[in-house]
Figure 1 (cartoon, one colour):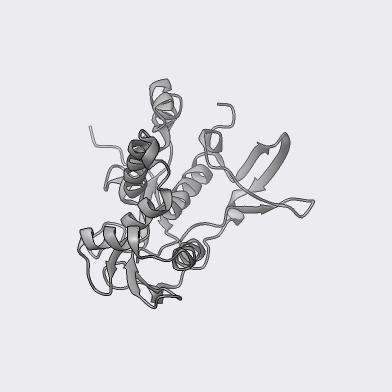
Figure 2 (spheres, one colour; figure 1 turned 90 degrees about the horizontal axis):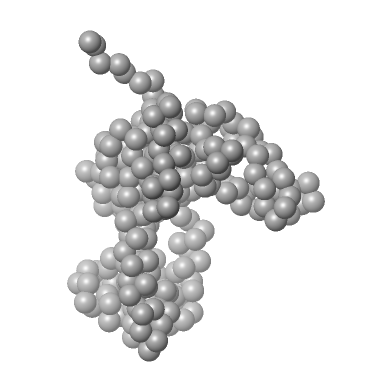
Length: 240
């Protein structure tokens, strides 16, 4: 029997692929995803996956046909992939509830946030100069795999009361890849723990927040309030 080929769509990524190394499958700035089928609905209702908290990850693996490790993707690009999958699978109308208020949005109107492609180098890294110290660094946009490592390290730290917290420095140690051209990890660790001024740390975090690629999930209510459109199991199947 001839192998059945699922219909697919090509999705433009908010990062334009520029935050990834040159040999990364998403460097082109586009990704091919297949239309959802009943098989993917089985994934969405799998209680074992739901309890483990990785049901959406398994869904994305299926929709991208495991052509790459979906954990090697930044949050913003993954949100764009989820958005496309939702529209292709269930249409663009999305109803959700926040604080007992019901909202309805047209997902087809959601665009990517502006991303300045001139900020990245050929390795997908970005540069920043600390405003107070003047030290120049290079950093990367974190992927889900990076976020998992950070979460695991924080969990380990929080087992010991004298090491509690550490979220800011732990995240910076994973995000910064070189300091004044020095990419030695032990030197980066020492710099983050002992030399970054609070003013510089805040400036870097704000810079990363402002430029990180993503889709615009901000929704303005009739009252003029701004809320963030949630992406969860209900995003794909409101009856769940």
